[in-house]
Structures are given as C-alpha cells and as structure tokens.
Image 1 (cartoon, one colour):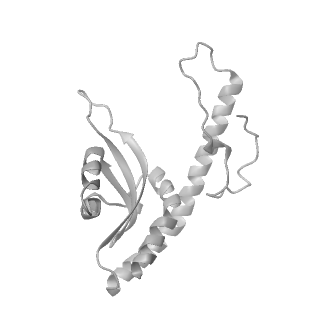
Image 2: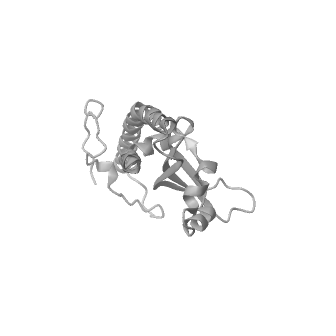
Image 3: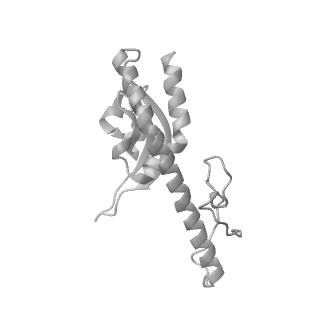
Length: 177
C-alpha cells in the first residue's frame, strides 16, 4: 500500500472519510529481509495519519460530550428518566501490565452513557465481563461501580468515544420515549 503524501493538516478528516491508515497492512516481523527505508517512511506516514485522526476525534469529543452530559443531567433532574445504563460497543481490549507470575485475564473497555453520570467508559476485567454478560442486566447493574466519566478518561478513550456518540445518544433519546 502506498500512501500519497498530502497536506492533511489543511484537509480536516471526518469520521466517515475513508482514510488509507484504516486499511490493514501486514508487516512480517520475522522476515529475514530488513525493512527498507521506503517501508519505514510508509510506516511513519501511517503513524502520523493515525495520530492526526486521533487528535481530530479527541477535539470532536471534547467539543460535544460536555454539552451532552449537561443535557443528560438536566433530564435526570426533571425525573423524566430513572437510573439507566446505555452500554455501547467495546472500544478496546488489552492485557494487564506484565507482573511476575502473569495474569489469567485482561481488560475490555466499553463505551457507556449512564443516567445520571453521562458519557464515559466501563473498564471491565475480561472474566467479569463474560460472567456479567451471561446474566440478564448483569452488565447494566454493575455499570455504576465501573464507570469512569468522560473528563477522567485517558485521551485515547475520549477520542474513541467520538465514534460511539451517535449510538449512545440515540439510545438515550429512544429511552426518553
């Protein structure tokens, strides 16, 4: 895959725009051949575009989530909605940091909108996530104990939430009836 060098700083990326870095490039790390400078330049360009997209998503989320969270709180205060958990997709799966003896599980990060509480993430231990997923309303009933509000999320998670906002806000509006 060849990346055309463009002045992407002048062309805003939209979350729906097809970007070359969204395609998967497989680089065999066990290849006896060293990476060529052209390969390194291509990787550098892919990384640069990925960082640019993350920045764009982060700016988008930072501009919109506080407003939505304020509206969620206002709806909560009116009594129109009871305590509700709207759970989104998993936005990350990761291993725990290495420790002596290792870990038997990892962590999944789920997008969420809690009423009250607003947009944020739910970091779950993978074993707990699987267990609660098998129980009716299991994840929803444990959501408040795990919720991290948007303003306390890592920037990468805040950026990932930008893509989840339409589904979360749509679920909120549908819950209003």
